[in-house]
Image 1 (spheres, rainbow, N blue to C red):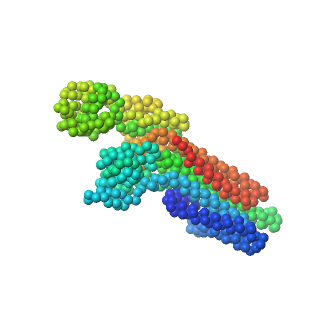
Image 2: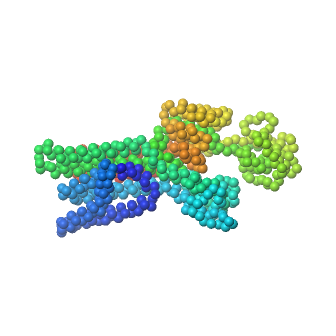
Length: 617
């Protein structure tokens, strides 16, 4: 297995402690070899033997690991890679007396490998900053006291105590206290969110103010943070088509290069008829091995994808692999669910007939209900409710709720006459006194987000909704969607999606819960607000954690920038190497030119790949 395939350019480097130690070790080796290499030139005039000993020592310091790795690859995997090319080229150079150039090649190759590791480490950190979401221990309330236990021992039903400044360990519901939770590491939201009794919180958020008691709903292994970490760590498992092609190409390319070098080194001298030119042709064959090393290809392409995934995750967009990132760059059609995707997915009071007194009265009655309409009315009244003032509340499913307040019978629910939109009537002692209108509000910037998608070339934007035609069209018109297909079951959404997919890559954007079938059926399934939704994490290709629609065009821009830089890296490496190969075959380039064409091009490709990380909202 090729070294770079094995790591998938950082796949094995997600756990940073070991990788950082390897980088430090590599720096020490390169520094020691570099000192010996430079010092050898100063002792050359005094002692040729000392000169060669210092060069060989420098070679072994940086080259021994490469030689051993190449030998293992050849023996166990029966394949050759760039380490094999470096080994043959440098050992051959030493054999013909070009020890200085052999050390230079191996030294600069090691520098290139070090820069690759550093680049991977930089990308890794942007992704695995999420690993800080996992505390090692949790403080629980048990037997009237507090105990600290390992996070893996926490079970559903336990009550965790989280003080100000601590990270919330697991998913749960607040049973005591009020606080503000910083979810920036999970969702990218810059502002803390207020949470109080009854609100759900997720592992990974930071409790920024008061102490709260949280009833655990899931053990850590099933929590949102754990599922997200698993998604991130496995992101590179799905290779892009471009990346798979480069991997296959590099294997065959390396074998072809070795055969061509053998022909140049051993066959060309015979046909030229000049025996004294054997060393010259052999040197050219060795130079070809160095210049043709596929490092720039097999490093820069996976690194570009890794950097793109890292950039997306930093903005709260989890992309489940390079293949999804590549597909996103080709996106032509986008189908949206309505509720919870284009809208907030929760009702809000938009107007009150009868004034604040009606709203206050209704909020007191509705405080005894858990219905979404009831919660919206209580929220609109800003929680200003005295539950002790409410007596003998009686709720009828599908009709409303009746309660006594100050001796009066107050009813909140359906009226006797139809009204436009969603509304509830308020009656006092059987007399109609007011009406409250509610609706599912649009998400902020929904219209601007869809306009951005069109600017990026999305040719068809459709709404596929299970809601009523009238409601779906109202929302669609508000955000600028012309094509609306309403009243659909999940199966019908899949059928409609197939009709849309005819002219290019198609994404479906949904809430990740009831839309799981169509998310799976789409070329790219995008789950909005996937935090806490198992269906989103399991099914979608892309998860937008903070529920923000503008993150969708941002994901498209990141993917397109990634693919643009991938093509730049491949084209630059190919042209530079081809130019040096032509010059080398003509006898106009030597080993130092080959070093630039290999290590220099690789370094430039790595630096170019890291430009992916710079994209901003």
